[in-house]
Image (cartoon, rainbow, N blue to C red; front, top):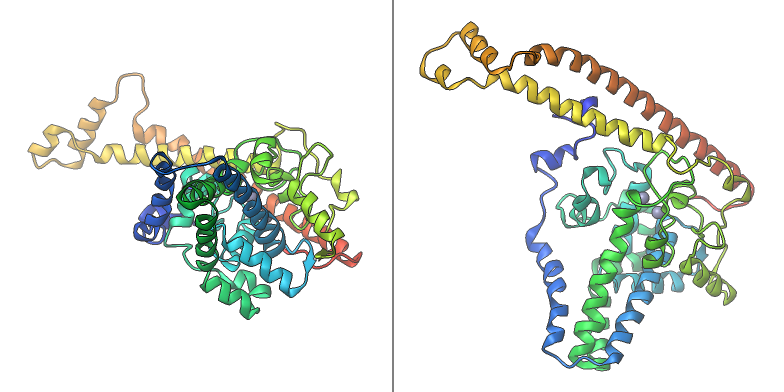
Length: 401
Ligand SMILES: [Zn+2]
Ligand SMILES: [Zn+2]
């Protein structure tokens, strides 16, 4: 079972199958799981309404540093800001306990480059758990991928923050204690942190599973109002995969995008500048009716069919190899084993090897269609890349994915 086998491309990452690279780092994951239990301590300490306000403020505020900073700025460069503001945005992001900006943005760029392909860091085709949190806890993606984020890795202050990303959370936790005592720590800091984790993670998992599609992107991204509310505007994920370099992700008046509104406010204060709007001429291109069989969904469905067929073939080819109880007793020759296998097949049902024959043809057909779909998806990406080059020529800064 290898990635090179086109029939089995719908299976999880090969390394996940043999467990060589995708093992969960359980020791490093202990703080993550313990943090989930700490809010239960609220039953044993004094909790005031101020602690709940602190929880809400720290959820919303830190979500902004993730969406506007780690995501729309460091991952996609969808606007500009000065070096001090850039550092403060990165520092604010570290308080969300989602590692450093280079780790976060580097892996996110890889997600955009290989969305729903084998090299995607968190595609739900590798399972919900993997896309939600498994990839973060795995040994495979423990380190920052600096090759994907060379443009920011050159800043020494960002590299320092990357190594010392624990300072921000500790300072914030201490501030919560000074503000609200243990209630401030348990509810204000830890509960908001856990909610913030899962609020952010649903973009990687659910935003590729739940919602509607407006654009025929070569992936399974979707638009969801629920996720937009949870994440301050990141739920318009199909819009975002269509135009990743846009600072605005809600493209219509009703697609709420608080991160965008806040960025507009910061632009008015001249803290950020050159916010990139979705180019008007691209908004109506590549539109697809929701539920239509566009290229991204087609590949997803077809991969699933390939996976089921591949498993069925593996199952059928494995069955004749399993000898019957009598075959164990005697030193049986191959014809005898065949006879034993023949007895197991109920009359009227095809023998496994006979059934495997058309299935192999089907698998070949599926893999060829999948290759065509891959080529079509690649050409869609190239077309979009070309339109981005055109928009760059029209004065937009370099679009980073
Ligand atoms: Zn995505
Ligand atoms: Zn993105």
